[in-house]
Length: 124
Length: 108
Image (tube, rainbow over all chains, first blue to last red; front, side):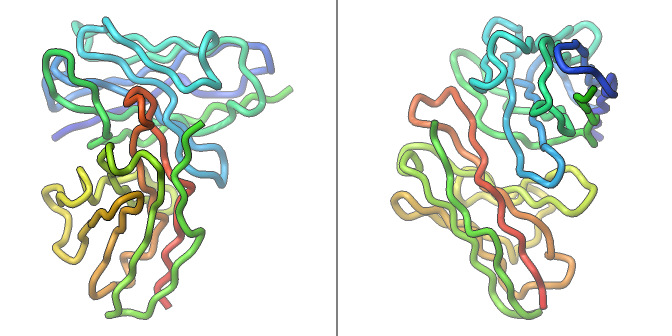
C-alpha cells in the first residue's frame, strides 16, 4: 500500500524558516517524480514544486522561487521542502504527492497518491 | 500566468448526471486530470489523461475533451459524490502545473 506521511509543519513568524518532510513507503520511491502541493485555508489547490527521480531537475511555482527548495533522499525514501523567508500567504496545508514513474527526459504531469498534509501557519 | 477556469458550483439531484467543465488555452496540447476532495481529506485522482479512469474509481466517472474545454461527467450521481472537484493540467511550456479553482458539487 502506498503511503505518504508529511511532518514538520507548525507555527512560524513571517520571515522565518521551516522544513517539511515526507516519508514514503509501499512503492519504489526512487522511480517516481515527487511533488509538493498546498492548499490555503478554504481555498483551492496550488502546485508548489516537483523533483525528478534522481533530483537532477526541480521546478517551482513562481511565487516560491528563490525561497523554497525541494529535495529528496532516495536512500531514506524521503522528500523535503525547505521553506525560507516565509510570508503570511504561505499559510496552507502542504501535501506530498507522487508523480509519474517515467524514464529518460519525461516530465511528470499528475499526482496519483497524496499524503494527508501538514499545516504551516505563518503569523506573528 | 496560465489559468484553468471551472464553475464555482454545480448542483444535481441523486441519480441525475453532473457535468463539470474546465477551460484553458493549453488544453488542446496538454492532458487534463481531475481530482475529488471531500472535506478534511486529501485529493483523490478520478480521471487521468482526459479520459482514463484510475483503478478503483467507479464507472460513473468519465472524462472528455473538446478543444479548450475538458469535462468531468458523473452519471447517476450519489450522495457520496458530494465534494470539491479540481481539474489540473500544465501550461504550454509543460513545466508549470496548474489547478483550476475547483467546483463544489452539491447533491440535492
